[in-house]
Length: 88
Image (cartoon, rainbow, N blue to C red; front, side, top):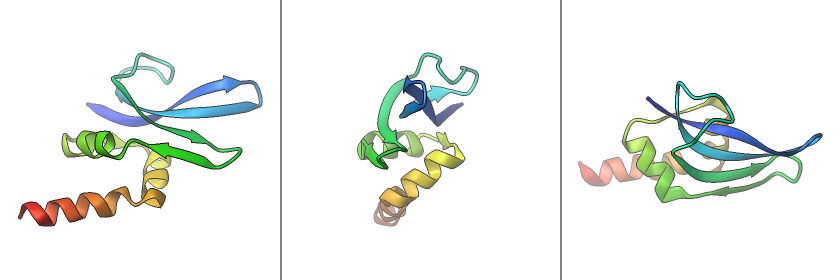
C-alpha cells in the first residue's frame, strides 16, 4: 500500500518537509517512490505537484492526516471530486 507522507529534511530546529509517495512498510526517511511536494512550516510555504498527487490518489494512495490537511488547503480534493463527476 502506498501513502502520501511527510519526509523530514533540513537541519536542527529548522525542519522542512518533502511530501512523498512511499510504501507503508518504509520508515519516515526511507526510500520514496516519488517526490510530489514540499512544505516549510516556518515560512508556511507549500509546493504541490497536483497531477502527480491526483494520480497517486486515483491509484488508491492514502494521505496521512497532515498531508490531507495541506492538500485540503490547496484544494486538491475539490479537483479530485470534479474529475470524478466528469468521468460519470
